[in-house]
Length: 279
Length: 249
Image (cartoon, rainbow over all chains, first blue to last red; front, side):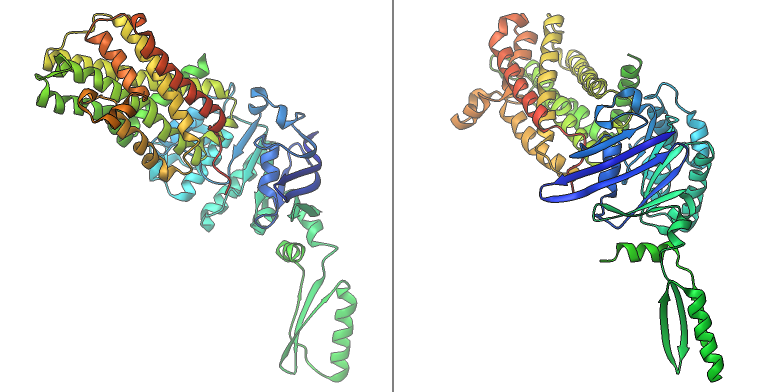
């Protein structure tokens, strides 16, 4: 079943077209990563799907419904974590979750959510006393407390230390295991590589590549071969690494030379991303 | 109804938890009543006892601080911090939310009015209002109109940091000019001219006429009309300018 489908989506602000005709679909139970540099159109796209913004053109279906015509029944089924924390500073963690749980007809137990986002020790602490990472985890908790089918996470781990990031990743994997559909925007490539079943790379309002992280780092991009010759570093990029490596080593052997510091590197998602988003 | 009561309870918790805001919007009129009441409570102002004059005036000051200033600042901060945006993504209907916020504000104001009347009776021997239903009706009209003005004002405030500055700039001079503390009769002409158009002048006059002169609320059609006209202006500004989301970066 398709949870989200987007075709020919366009959005213009004044004379700047932020989203210029994009298509993608997210299957139920999938973690879909939307990657791209700042200003690529990620947040605009997500906010159209969340029902915050009106599109100029194209067709959008989120859980079978056009977000522009959505109502409270639809909002029972989605969870939203915005890019910046949006919390009541004077409530405790537990109170915050209870307040938001009260907005839904079938919420998840706030105590269970406290466990999921690992804020057990802070349950009675006022929100304003929490660290940035802890506030972000509470933000995530508020997106989960309605027990939604589809969760939007807009840069969920920005500003986390490595330990907190790993903990958040585990939370997102747990949600994935529960069969939730997740749309994740991020500019951390390792995050997309770790979590997303499929990734779309957005640049200047168009999708420049889409596929599984393995597909993206597989085929299209060139393999990098580095070595030293006469003290100079040589870097070669090739689509035919096997042949080129054979030629290089054969020549070197024929000349009786050593290829110092020979290194063959498969591209990571980061390389693909940098290549795709470069001017 | 369940959602409305849930949000109403939440709003009350949020108001009393925010000590600074509760002090400025709720306790300050009470403190002013105690301070000024002991200074000129036994003088005569506009032909009535100072304490009785001030009691009605502080109810007027209270509507400006809770329903107008407090509400405007709270809603700007919630808008700019993204809380309103997040609430819009939940199944809580926007109207249920807004009505709960307004009713909660009214409850706070009503508690304040009861405290002022109680203190006036106990400390300054001011008689209890002889027309409680007229008074309640006046308080509802005043709170609704000033809340509409407060929501209308949010559209003119750009940032959470600037909200108290802008709101205080509007409401403190208004509270003083409108004759909540002193009688405008002795003001210079230009201040009286300003006072003659401000809604708080008429709301204070309305409550004073009901509380001190024992008028029925319906004998004060002119004051009610002016307060409601200001409320309508506020409502129009709120419909145009109230936003759920922070300004685009």
